Length: 112
Ligand SMILES: [Zn+2]
Image 1 (cartoon, helix red, strand yellow):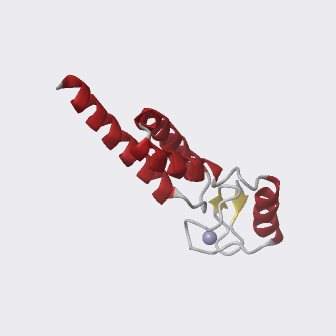
Image 2: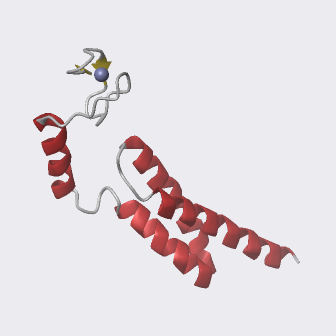
């Protein structure tokens, strides 16, 4: 926790914006730390959602990939929720939806 420079209320460390007054932290702490993380982990932030997206697409052709797409999609959603400001939620949800749909279709075909 650290105090917000504008309203002085406690803010969770690394949060890019104050939830109380909406102040965006442009200080050296927030910006450089974020940039440093991005350089250290070039694939870590969106890598999971990218992988989930590709596996989701692949599941449309290769059905056994469907469960993998769901798992990767769920992991990517968690990863994105854990780190505010990251992108790729669309890909992650796409992977879960496609994975679930393909699994349902395969299950339906196997049952009938
Ligand atoms: Zn504030």
